[in-house]
Image 1 (cartoon, rainbow, N blue to C red):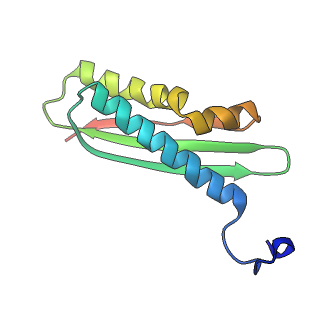
Image 2 (image 1 turned 90 degrees about the vertical axis):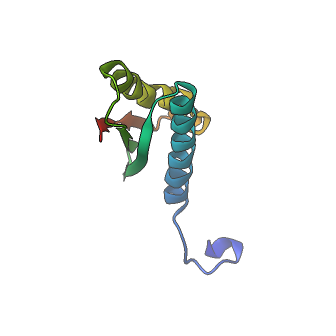
Length: 111
């Protein structure tokens, strides 16, 4: 911020906030998956933000890849974990109180 003596270059504060909530969500999802002892082979999370004057919405796109021998029960548990992580992410919960909309569009597959 130039008003604080900075150059005015760098990340937008809302972009930094989206990065922070994505990190929180990913860490929480990792914890939930590990606590359920699911056979995770790969995990990735991409997030998009829609920032306008009347809406601030973040959508997380987690993709969980389970081992080839994963059961249907494990696949369903991994899918539920994507929502559980949303509820468990404290940063996301704070943002929701500030009327930020957060959605989860999870995908679970097996190799």
